[in-house]
Figure 1: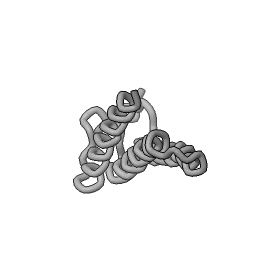
Figure 2: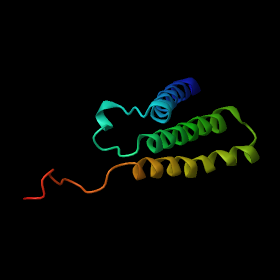
Figure 3: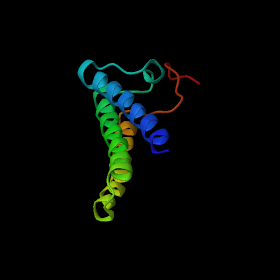
Figure 4: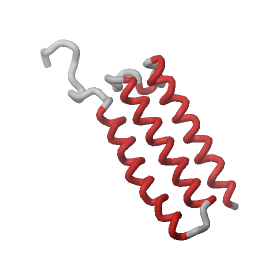
Length: 103
């Protein structure tokens, strides 16, 4: 039963990490996010941090059986939040403004 949860989460984390590496090395962002991302390299770093946190959660929850070391897995929630904040910082600001300044 553990593999039903662990495999999809790790595959999702690997896809996020691949997108993060593409953002860091090439400045490439997925087409759905291209309009809103202002700094693609920072966006890539945020994706890498978030994917690391997802993998670390799975390792600590499924692979480690000692309760003392399993507590370190709860710290990955803070790392995941840090990655999401970095992703948010890389987005454009300004809302729904038009190109011209007239209403």
